[in-house]
Every structure is written in C-alpha cells, then in structure tokens.
Amino acid sequence: MFPLIIRGRNSPGELHKWRNFIASLTFLQNPSSFSSASAAADLTRRKGNTFTLSYLVESLGFTTKLAESILRKVTAEKTNSNPDSVLSLLRSHGFTDSHLSAIIRTYPRLLSLDAESSLAPKLRFLTSRGASTYELTEVLSKVPKILGIKKDKALSRYYDFVREMTVADNKSSEFEKLCRSLPEGSAQGNKLRNFLVLRDMGVPQRLLLPLLISNHHACCGKEKFEETLKKVVEMGFEPATYRFLEALRMLYLLSDKTIQEKLCFYQKLGFSEGEVWEMFKKNPSFLPLSEKNVLNSIEAYLGLGFSRDEFAVLVKCHPQCLNYSSELVKKKAEFLVKNMNWPVKALVSNPTVLGYNLEKRTIPRCNVIKALMSRGLLGSELPSIGSVLVCTDHAFLKRYVIKHDDDKELVANLMAIFTGDHVS
Image (cartoon, rainbow, N blue to C red):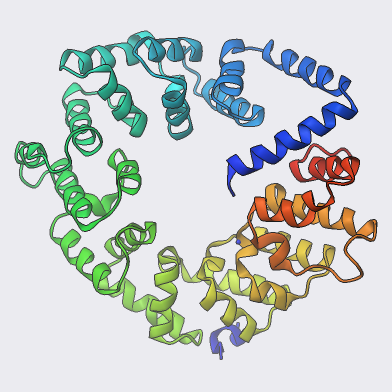
C-alpha cells in the first residue's frame, strides 16, 4: 500500500433562540451588564457609517461582527459610495428588510456602488421596461449581482431570464423566445440554453441562480457541455444536489488525457480506479488537485501520527481531507489530539471534524466540555468526538448546556463560553 509515499472538516435560528434564553437569565442576574454593552455598541456606531451599521444589526438581524466586516470590505473598495444612500435608494423602490437582508448577504459589494450614478439608472431602466415593484424586488433579491452589469442590453437579458424563472410561469414559452433571440454559438446564448437544460433536468433555482452571473465555464459550452453532462448523469449524480454541478464543472475543465493521468497517479498511491471514482462522487473537487499538493497533504497526515492504512480509510470516507491545507489540518489535529486527548483513530472515524471551523465551532464546544469536566459534571471519561463536534448547535446545547437549567449561573457561564463572550 502507498509505494509512492514510502519512497519519498446549524441552524442560526435555533442558536438565536438559545442566546435569547441565556440573555434573559443574564439580565435577571446583572441588569447593568446590558447598559455597558449598549454603551459599547453606541460607541461603535459613532465611528462611521452610523446608520448603516445600526440598520444591518437592528433591522436586518446581522451580528455586529458580520456588519462591521461587510462595511470594512465596502470601505476597502476605495470608491465614493455611501452605503446609507444605497439602502435609501433600494427602500424607495419597495425593497423590504427581508429583501435587503438577502441582497447584502449574497452581494455585499452592492453597498460599495454609487447610488446615483450606478444603481439609480439601472433601476429606472428596468422600471421603464415595465417591471413592477413586486417583480423588481423579487428578481433582484434572488440574483442581486445583476445590478453589477454595466451594459443595458446584458442587464435586460439576464433580468428577463431570472424573471421568467422566479416570477413568471416556469412553463412559459418566454424561455424559448428569449433563447432564440440570442446569437447562435455565443457564450451568453449557450449559458442560457444550458441553464434551461439543467432546469428541466431538476436542478433547483437555489443552485442555478447563483451561477447566472458567474464565470462557470461549463455552462457556457455547447458540445463539450453535452458530453460532460452525459458523463455526470451516467455516474449517478442527483441533479437536485450541489455535487451534480460540481461534478459537471470538474469534468468539463479536465481533458480525457488529464483525467487518465490523475487515475494513474492515485493508482500508484494504492487506490483502485473504482475507489477514485467513488471518492469523486463524494467530493468532485479533489480530482483536479496537483500531485504536489496531494503528496504534501499525505506527508502532513502521516507526520501527525496517521498510519498509511488510516490515511487511506480517512480519504476514501471523506476525500475532502485532501482539499484542506496542511497547515490547517496540522493545527486542528494537534488541538484535538494533544489538547483534548482524543486518539487519532477518533478522527479517522469522524473525518468531518477536520473540516469544521476551529475558532467558531471546535474550540468553543471543546471549552464547554473542559468547563464541565473541571466541575466533575461529565465523569472521568472524555465524551466521544462525534457527540461533541458532529452534532448540530441545538443538539450540543441540549446535551451539554440546557440540561443544567437548574443552575442558572452555570448555564450563563457555559453559554458565554459557547458564544465566545467568555473572558478567561
């Protein structure tokens, strides 16, 4: 096995409920804490983009951290934009908080555009073509990147396409009329025609629409698109899943010769051709990886104490492991094995933990476990890595935090650790 080596990885709504629960507990115990937090928030809002920050947080439900991150990116664009003006313009055209939340989450760069010189003319143009307030808000909240298109002709074409998919009757002949109006063989014409093919195969809007204003080359081809689509279907990918489109993109980008070279490389590592394709079905994006990156990844895993057989099991079960950077894998594995004392075999049995965000998910949960163990509330044995990391936020809180609701102070402390508000 591995002769070549021998030679040389929750619901926000649910979490919000628990945070509200603990907030009420904390308020009952220390009402003054809220006045200090409010003062800190007020101080932050006075630093610039006053209305925008408070609006993102209070009206759209963004966390302060996310709102500040978005505004930093907006200011980094170095334009003369005014986010407040952008929001005011959109609201004047009937966009609700729900629409704006969806737009900004999907396309935060919109706030960096100039309201008067860039956005207003496009909205006037679309309205002049007969777009109602309902249609305008529904279409643009689905694919806000349309507003980044500069030319009216392209803007009109993509807008019509999205409108037909989201607002009009999906069986309307307008789809076909729209496609026939495009030049034969053009990249844009091919993209729209291919989108119709994918839609008719069952690819859902939530997966199709984000591709519309993207550089997804597979959707711009014709003959090769058809050939690649046939391969993906024959391999058994389900059109309703993201992996279907990912497989389509990967096979489209790789030539037959390159694919054969990839198969030979993995066979030298000890994997059969059938195993490689099974790995591809689980994670299509691993196939284009360079040989150098794969060998570096293997070296990193072996250096962390994984045996060659354990690495083979890890990759066949969760090929995404090959996509993770060696530096991050080392950091995560060392924390889980050395800091938390879970054995390497626990990672092999639960490989998805290597893909979880260390700071946002792994460390907060592990710190909760440490706090419970220090109080003797979990017994002498460390809980399984799956019960701590693989479950949802709701399940974790119910299992390790809310069960102690007879001790309000303990629950408050555990929630502070879990949400990152704990000060050690």
